[in-house]
Amino acid sequence: MKQNKRILVGILLVVGVVYGVLAWRARPVADRPFFADEGFMVIAHQGGDGLRPGDTMAAFDHAVALGVDVLEMDIHATADGAIVLMHDATVDRTTNGSGAIKEMTLAELKALDAGYNWSPDGGQTFPYRGQGITVPTLEEVFTAYPFMRMNIEIKQKEPSIVQPFCQLIHQYGMEERVLVASFHPETMTEFREVCSDVATSMVEPEIRWLYGLHLVFLGQLFAPPAEAIQIPEYSGGLHVATGRFVRAAHAKNVRVHVWTVNETADMQRLIGIGVDGIITDRPDRLLALLGRQSGEVENE
Image 1 (cartoon, rainbow, N blue to C red):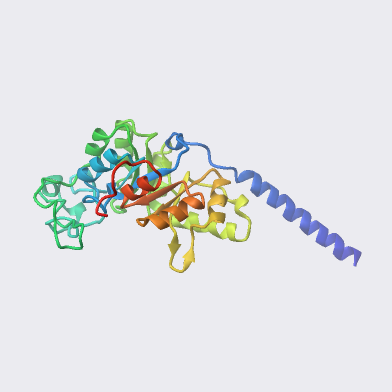
Image 2: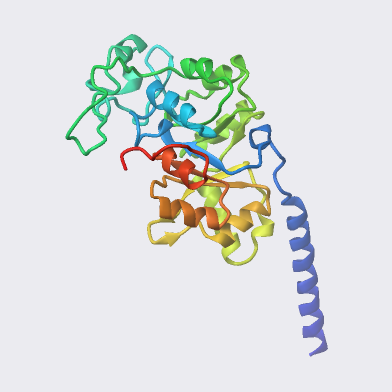
């Protein structure tokens, strides 16, 4: 019996030491200049796709005029190497053209009407057709809004666009104003190696690891690989964005942004549990909720 107790005590001591070492190594992530302003972030999804054609200068101009904190956008590369903004890998859904972006030249993209298929009323009207709205390049966006923070998602996986993207960030001095996201773990690993001075958001396997640890009250063992988590409120039947999960992230100095939230009641609930930002197609509603916008909310 005494021998069994000694064995048990020994096991507990080993477990305690291992736990202590892991907890010590899992330090909070360091601060980044992107998050120097500790306030809540209004993040305009594609510039506010519910208000203007998404990922266009028309949307970004409008979002800046509204007073959003961050412009969210998506990037691909053309056949001739230009980094351009569009949510999809093809131009079919949003323009009057057809084809994969990576198989088209910039000149071919620029000839398309990027406002062609956008409608505020389910397809009854198309107010931005023929208004000269084109697919913008990332350089155009950096040039137009050097003072804005940007949440940029790398959509294209193959061929990799990480190197030219990182070069543009440095060329335009946007290292402290860009937060980079991607759904592709390999792409994010490459970006963090190439552009280590730029803030990033976690990819899904990393988020799952923190979520699993927090469920069993071991979130303190998580070593954060990035400065932000960007999640939906629900994933399938799983409630991801909970107050306890937000607190687990905050314990590691990780910010939590929730996407894509367009209804005022949902925005209010998420603000109530302490999220650090909301990615929305309707930044006008979020700004109004926060008391940061004068005038009426559009289309209501």
